[in-house]
Image 1 (cartoon, rainbow, N blue to C red):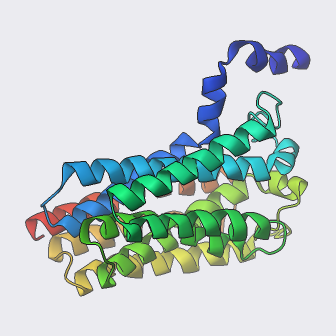
Image 2 (cartoon, rainbow, N blue to C red):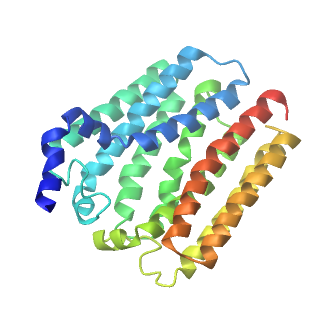
Length: 299
């Protein structure tokens, strides 16, 4: 029965679908959303549709290409984890050389699009993000639990790229957006890691959750990082990006998210980690939406 189930993807899934899986489209969509938010906030309502389009195209290429190269680099650990064992490379549906070629081509093309059709600063930030992801975060996963902090740098870069695309420079406002995304990723990823900690241990990844038998260290980090996120979410008001309406929304959203973090910390079950994860997915677009409304309408 198991052999029959495993054989289905080999005969029924088109190669183009497997190539799209390499690019981690779910993550790519989130990257494009936050990059768009950064561009919109920096443009102060004067949106250049052509620049925005090229920003999204170049960012999508770089994000997807870096994801494909990450899958190429981690194809052996992926084969050891239940949640990733059916990805195109460990399942044998795509060859490593195909994945590497797709990833490299997308990153180079994306960097060229951003450099020549947006501006060199945006391209440089994209290259930096991909470099940290591939050459720092990915190898660190086998070495140190600090990999999560390093990986958060990459995830916090898209809104800064959006800001740079609109302004041609970065400033305190871009730094604020970076901090919000940086701290958001910590409870988001820790929730995922807790749900799949056995998988990470099986693959030899040195995540915080691996070896944290009672979950106290993970719980502590969830509370600390979520609290830091609430503080970072107030910073747009301090630097004049939004006003009282946004502040009220940010505090309400932050309180709700923090409650989910505390709930997980008090009872570290897979179910509560899942609720925290989905809460993070709701929180970020809601916060960015409130910030966009506040910046646009002065609220």
